[in-house]
Structures are given as C-alpha cells and as structure tokens.
Length: 78
Image 1: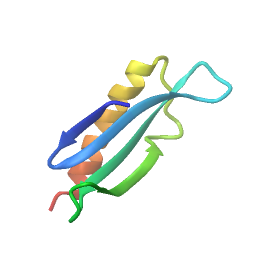
Image 2: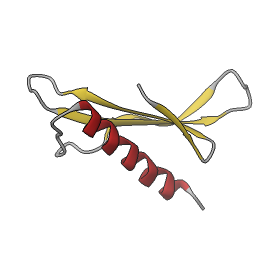
Image 3: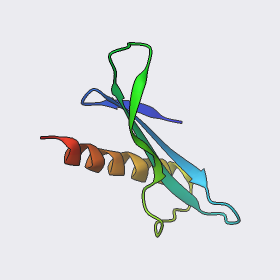
Image 4: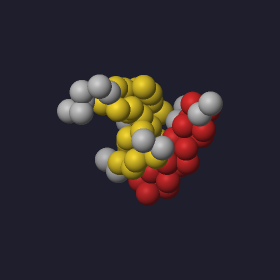
C-alpha cells in the first residue's frame, strides 16, 4: 500500500480489485500525528473514493486515490 506524507498527515492510498470483477476501486485512509510518537490517529478511516468509480488497473486506482486524498486534506485545512 503506497504511503505519502502530505502536510504532516500520513496518507495511505491503494487500488483494490473489486470482488467478482476485473475492475479496480480506489481507497484512501488518512492518519494524523498523536501525542504518542509510536501511534497515529486515524482521522479518515479507509474508504472507497467513489462507489461509481471503477478503473481498469491498479495503477490508475492508486493515482485516483492519491488525487482524492489531496482533496480530502484540502477540505481539512483552515
């Protein structure tokens, strides 16, 4: 699962094969730092970017998940 640090948040983005199909879904989860340096707070539990969005391969799904994560973080900024 690819991970990226964006604005201090740890973002996990992945493409997963959708059950019963040959299509892929894009998934995102986001973690924020906590007072304990050994743990992160899950501020955006893993969820599919869009129920209507299906992609033809894993790379495309991961790219879409990364784009969606940036949108989620943009909404979290003051």
